[in-house]
Length: 102
Image (cartoon, rainbow, N blue to C red; front, top):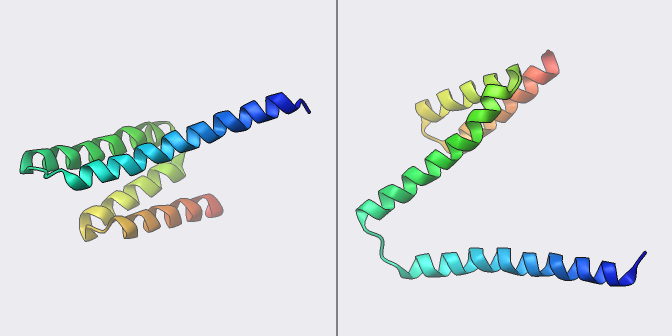
C-alpha cells in the first residue's frame, strides 16, 4: 500500500465531505434568513416535484414489472391519502411482494 496515495485519497475525500456538508448547512442558514414571497415558494415547491418526476420516470419506463406496480400503487396512495410517507411505504411493500411472489 502506497502511503502518499492513501493520504492524498483521504485528503480528497475529506475535502469533498467538508464541501458537501458545508453547502448543505450554509444553504439552510441562508434560506432561513431570507423571506420568501408566495411566487418563490411556489417555484421551490414545483421544482422539488419536477426533480422527483425526472428521477422516477426513467426508472419506471426502463424498470421491471415490480417497479411499475410499486410506482402505480404509490401514486394512487399519494393521490388518495396525500401522505408521502404512507405512499413510499406502500410502494416498497408492493415492489417487495411482487418480487417475492413472481
